[in-house]
Length: 137
Image (cartoon, rainbow, N blue to C red; front, side, top):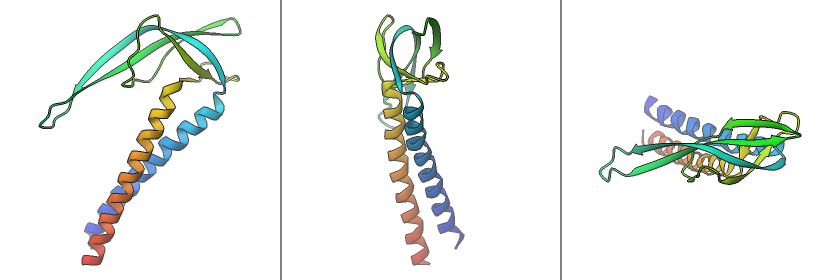
């Protein structure tokens, strides 16, 4: 009896995290509505090797950007992603007019939404498996 509850709880947790990622990206898009061009000053690179049989490598790039809002120069570390950035590259950046340090690079919220949808679907599948276990018992 407890087995299905564990599956259902794990599925609900995945679903909730997915929903938070989707909504978080949407809220940030609403807050950060002013667009500017930022310059990538530096890029940190991290390569991750998966522990599967294929031993696939994924590289994550974390850009450090510089942009100007109303004469004030702002430097900010962005979120890492698989999007390759180069030093000196210009990127579209959206910022909050009330708090210019609150910003995101265009691709960041899209990545969060994709991850949110994937986790949400995974949560639904895991909850369904838990429901099947309940019917079998």
